[in-house]
Length: 319
Image (cartoon, rainbow, N blue to C red; front, side, top):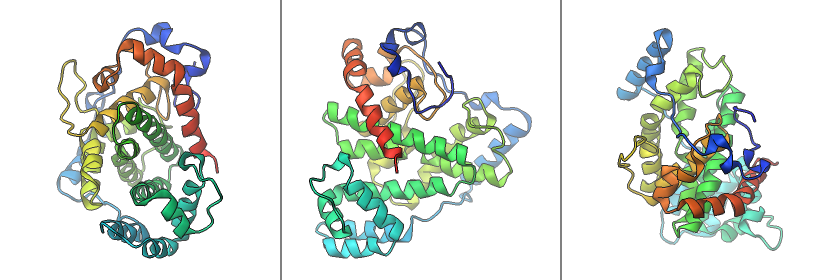
């Protein structure tokens, strides 16, 4: 079984949660104490830049920003929103692709932006716009293996978080967006590392560059959330996800969508979905239990639902 990030998870091997490596242990992410010499200096240099507000936060794509402004109106005109999106061909194509996907259940082909807006609804449209904005951040990273790793993880985490939201009667769309965007600060950290001529080592959780991103991505992401005026629930997921990792430590997260994101993230790490695989005690994951699972209901989720959810996520990488 591979220890590296992959789109193929161990669930295809049967009851993976009963394998020895999944019946004990816990997920432990590498910390800054692992860094020495030049790597430590790079971490401290970027950290100072963040603290001084000198980190470059890209603007949201113009058409996305204008559409988002229109959507703040309680009753925006669909045609006005559609015209704004049509000014950006890539955004229009992205919107049509989503509207016609199985996920949103279109009964007939949707061939215009205005119809796509009407079909998705204004709430989901906001999510599609934010998803495209993050994809463009990913596409701007020169090191494709690193960027694709981040995007793969984001999609898997978002899809699993949405399913968890559905199971526990949370806001499914917000769970999806929280899962999608919670690690967005890592993309901005990637850009900083590229400027310094880093990222020569391949993507791996043990690589110094990955540890640097893990140390800095919450504070960088928080600055981006403020600049982009993201909803409070998404800003909460960006700032506070997985910030309480010690046994019994209380999470500072204020929104249930952040808890769903934490659980989805731990599952992605356990299975190696967009991250190196870190097997753990799968039936006693603290984040899953905090969300409301019991070991027995968690086993049932793995057995009955998880494979379908992962296949659903995989469909997002097609086309």
